[in-house]
Length: 509
Ligand code: ADP
Image (cartoon, rainbow, N blue to C red; front, side):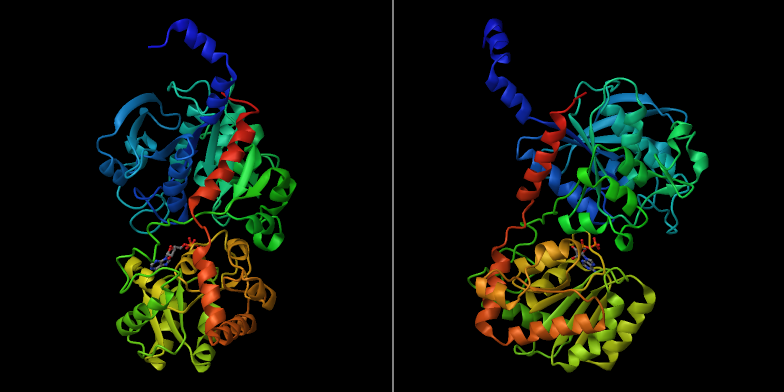
């Protein structure tokens, strides 16, 4: 065993200081995490990014609410600490467990009165928001802030608190008004459309000082806004793609926050999400009829046949097959897909759609499918297995989102040799290299990006893709380039680490 003088000497060395700096400590606050609780993309990021950071030697712990389903899945969690519930009678407990399938520690905020219920994380079984959401996520924010302060009941103190979306937006505000030393904060926007706006009468009950309720604080058009609080008080802001980081500073995509985001543009960065390259791997995917790699991409045709058979489309290897998998919403441009579909079929392509969402569009799509048997298939619902087969069996993937913070399917489709056709917005603009003549010549093209998100713009891009498809050599090059692109979490994790390092060298708890 090393002697005490040696240890003391070692602790004064550069090596020790470098190692200490390497092990940056992060508290990652989130309201959802795959595979414990999921309603959207935030859960996927929270499930993957901490593990990727952990692989880079980051000491990261994730704080989540103790929803009933989380408690059931982590029944062996061990108690760590307790503190008085600031918003209701009784105590709140922090328990620790590991995120299943990883070594990442999870800190669970156990408060039965707030989280131990049936229904979703944000909504009652009836589909309405829980009436006490402000207090529930106020508590999550408060617990995260407490653990990032020198009043923490734990020995472990983070160098940086990383907050995600409105549900953790009050944490930077709590830290700003807490006496003593506090950790600096990062606030990440995964979807600016959800803001957590509540009545102003909650400022006091949530323990926030009255003077914070102004435009230069957490007020948003007369409401107390959790997201605005985060965007205003956090030290650094980030979102999930560089293009979206620029777009949200403009009125048409800023959801009312563009002024503040523009003002704070010097601390706002865009870091692309990664994808799970093990789950989405055409070389080893149990949902496929035939697995393949970039070298054996011709084997896609067996998946195309399987897909055409499964969906009742004419089995025809020559007909280009276009897939659409998405929530059926205005954001995803589903209304434009509906309008342009007959013309796409007229051009000789087949269309396979999977998704659910706005009922009117769902019904119109289903009726259209009845009028075009064998050519158009519409599956309403959520089907993970089918989505994998569609990525593998289709020739191209259509994703004309009106806005897209990052987007995943365009990355999955490139990995599956299914060039995407996308509106050049947000993460779509950052992840798809357009098959322009120059990019084709340079060997960098991976898909088709268009700029006019309307009937004409979508149709023109689809026709351009169909023309290119006829040139087998060019098409194969586009497929293979997309398949070779690195969409793993490794790159994103390094960028987050650089962000944490920049902050943690400034101040720590
Ligand atoms: P968003 O999070 O805005 O809905 P993303 O492209 O970021 O869009 O992620 C959507 C994820 O959900 C993707 O993994 C996509 O494949 C999946 N998905 C969406 N709708 C369906 C569906 N009906 N069936 C299966 N998977 C779906």
